[in-house]
Amino acid sequence: MDNKLGKQVLKTIVIVCPNSNCREASITAYLGSYTDVIGGFGTKEKDEPPHSVWPLRPQAKIKIYPDYVPEVIIKDYQEACLIKNFSPKASATLSRRCLQGMIRGVWDVKKNRLVDEIDALKNKIDALSWEAIDSIRHIGNIGAHMEKDINLILEVEPKEAELLIGLIETLITEWYVNKHEREARMNKIIEVAKNKI
Image 1 (spheres, rainbow, N blue to C red):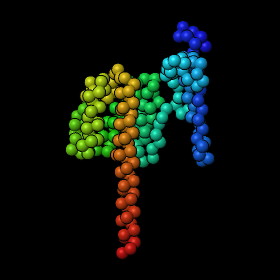
Image 2 (cartoon, one colour; image 1 turned 90 degrees about the vertical axis):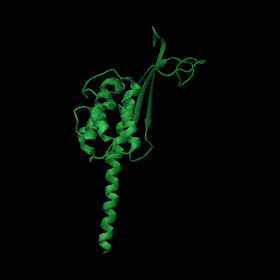
Image 3 (cartoon, rainbow, N blue to C red; image 1 turned 180 degrees about the horizontal axis):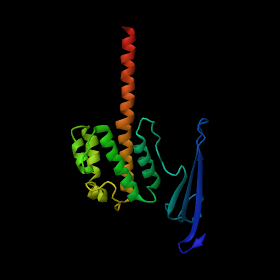
Image 4 (spheres, rainbow, N blue to C red; image 1 turned 30 degrees about the horizontal axis):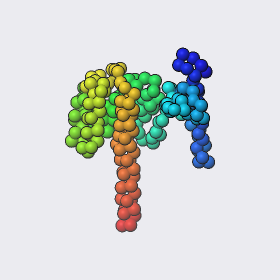
């Protein structure tokens, strides 16, 4: 289509999982400047990224977690992922709520402000995890508002929202999934040992 932005092209890419048990389709639409180069955006001389990207199916990159991860955490995480591209600030708000829910649920730390809950974690978790959680407070607008109400909607850059989602994914894996798998392994060892006696 030719418009005030010049010639534009809408490209759709469909990828189907080759696993016969899956066969899920991933569909993404891209809008960018027209090029004579097949499959690209921009000009022959200068390749350009697309102006807009729309994940159509799935609507976002959302990791699937086992049902022993609390439903409220999963719902906030999924919604944060779904709206990240459309509203980074709403996504960050949901991620902060998710973080606070995990801190309260896993570590039984309940303070009035998220910043105080993060501070209370310092001696409860490994130093690297705490430093990563604490360092999020120092990134742009996320850091400027962590101590306020977690439900506040504030200006957030898309990269900041993505960092928060990455942190949430890491913490869900470490605090729920790895813990559950470790407990299952240890219980199996104990059970085998009891049966040998």
